[in-house]
Image (cartoon, rainbow, N blue to C red; front, side):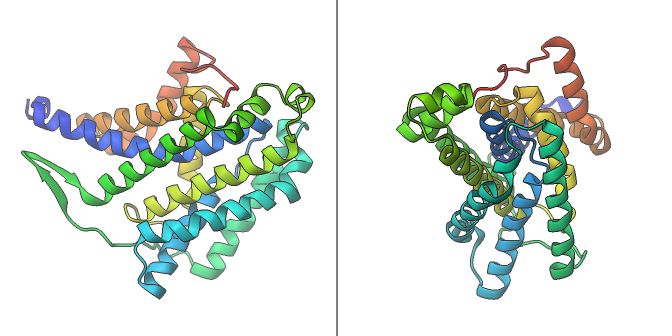
Length: 291
């Protein structure tokens, strides 16, 4: 069969890894929030779209390439997320998860409607990269290659921050046990604000990368938030590394299913993986609740 030729299989694998890196960046932020605060943030995908529309505006108004607009958008969304946690999310921490779910769902609806008022329901895109990189018989889409590699670098950077720095270890300590961390002198409230800001910035960066691959509109977040929840359950709720594994796994499986069966089946892969993992390993690939 033509689909079984090594070049085609390698092409599917590369496409899956690049898509998975973008998923991992987005889901990693959502899992970080859950790991530190035990909060379900339905509005996470809307922070992604703020990044996407920010890249769109900066490109069309100022001619700024999305890779450079990252330097503007990511810090702004970090500050927005930081104070958003201080004003709203801190009030629902330590309350039943349904409370945070409903609160952030309300924020999601508000942001979607504000987006519709400003940008309408028309699809937008940022067509800055065209064509493919040719590597032997392989053709790797330039937008997907750039978005995937940047997403991977950012995810690894966040992991190294959590693993190597004093502040990152404080985030992990709060994730492990907030009360013990507070007794040890860690400002838990400040860490929560930092974590939410960092997670929002990751979503914004994912949105910038998304803008060069896909067309998007203010309601595009629904599909991505569904995939994010599947990824964090597959990888392990609250486990940052688990979100990376889950995102990569989903991207690769989607690519192969789309190639061998159909793109319609590929859209259902996240939920099939979710059910499979829950049956085989209910705590996810990397266990739960550790940043």
